[in-house]
Length: 400
Image 1 (cartoon, helix red, strand yellow):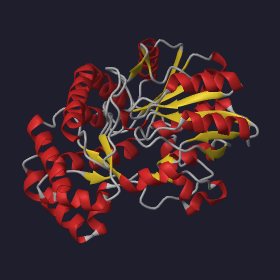
Image 2 (cartoon, helix red, strand yellow):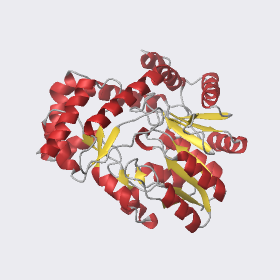
Image 3 (tube, rainbow, N blue to C red):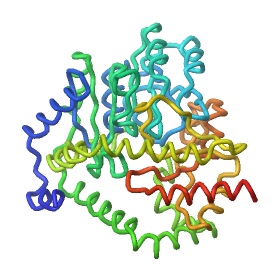
């Protein structure tokens, strides 16, 4: 109903609504400045462009989507890939320490909290401070995660969040960048005022239509009776024309200029959707953490299976419960045949991609993760019975 009313009103943006939302979000995170944006990747672009000089190195994880690398390039940065830790999929602080000492003219470190798993952000912040390097946190998948009493996204110079279609707070599309640094905030706003475009009813309407289609396809009983069966058949038989419809980043390319679709200002419709989602966020995160604990208990002790580490309550918010196994395709096929919905990750080791060949580097952990990672559903509505059946199916694979 909110989306429909927004469309009927032409999706016009009220700058008062957006400004009020930015002020509320800054207060929520305990920072002085927040900027509402159409996409989290736009926030990465603005933060990096406001912080670095053109040509400076930006150290980041290669395990991500290609557009994260492209945002660094579009902002004028030179990507330098740092390997990850297998169990968290996040950048390895020890590898980062070495790169900070070895890399010339580092302008920023971009640390991602992947799959809602909070990185070792305290150690990373100390490393950056010691080297006089800015820290940007990509918390697109980690809204609500807290480390040592502080929200992720507030440890560095800037933090970026997502309100995308499958995120914990869903505004179909949308993002936010926060900072305590007045000079960085002023530069981001200056860049945004110069480059941004008005909210586009046509752009957002297309995405609302796509979101509605996804909602219909994934809602029971239609999903379990029709579309899951189709997806399972496609995976088992290698029919990529079907399986690719559920993926992004299928054909990564290198960009040097920002696409216009990334520059439309946030609409008041998106603001209202975010505000609504924030109301249920605390309860939703508790549900995700309970689901993760159930998976962890049921899957612990399986030889060769990498599972997320157990941490202090609240540190991880589990966008997915991400597991890894060297025979991921066989494991996924086995579980699908048992009627449970899991899938292989679409994220890549961008350090190996041909489109980023000039930045290529050896990141063996990221390479292994990209080949072995599997998503287990962890969303609040995924019931304990479903989780138990998924656990049983996975354990059955190891018992075979």
